Length: 325
Image 1 (cartoon, one colour):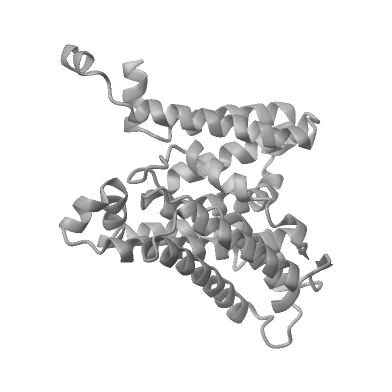
Image 2: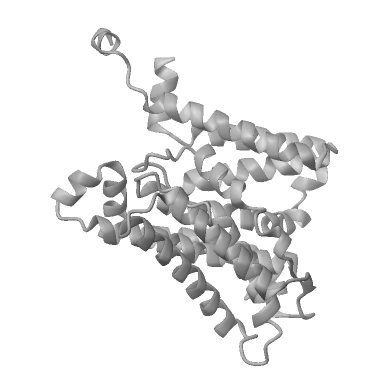
């Protein structure tokens, strides 16, 4: 058990990695066409929203203070509805050069608001983001009270195929990875991990804890904007009833990936593996004709397993055991 705990502590993504490999093999066995090269682009298109909402939830969790942003899934869905219902039909804002910045600014604004509520006004993160969830639900219903489709031949359709000479879904998947890599070359990411690990020590070292936490929620909002673009590309429809579809997925992917709710550890790799696990599980259950009603319990069971394993990795051994070791 001590060796297992040590491995989990050193490689927090290990559980999600094992599950991802196992479920990938199970999917290929259950549905051989799943692994066929001609289906890779379609699979990546379907996977992109899972991965992007997971990445969007990650910065707030790493920042500590119980930073669980439950508004990420609704934010991504609301942005996709906004794109489909308002931007694409518009004669002025239908261009991607205008629609994409608007979507990202929308996400950044919501993320900044969440960060301000948490870091400045001292709201509990779950309460602040739950309030934002209700606000976003109301906005989505106001934008489109009835389901509607996107205009035919709009620019988002290229994101599910090939665009600019590359596979479209890869552009969306790569966006948060490139941003995270760039942040790793600056003090910002080190400050984010430092605040999440011990905000008092970070403050004593001269780190602006409030600004870092606001930045974490804002960055999550920007990533949610990318997720909203991916959803618009796949769904090609504005349907407010889907507003809560990715709420549990976003949270479960982060926890399954091994990023502890306490903050200070984890990263995008963890969340990507957690999202892969959930996506592959959903696809596997569908391929063997399991009712969709059982998918949520399956997510919940995997989330519980991730929490238990995370607590095992972080739990300290008794003093006698540590002395004996």
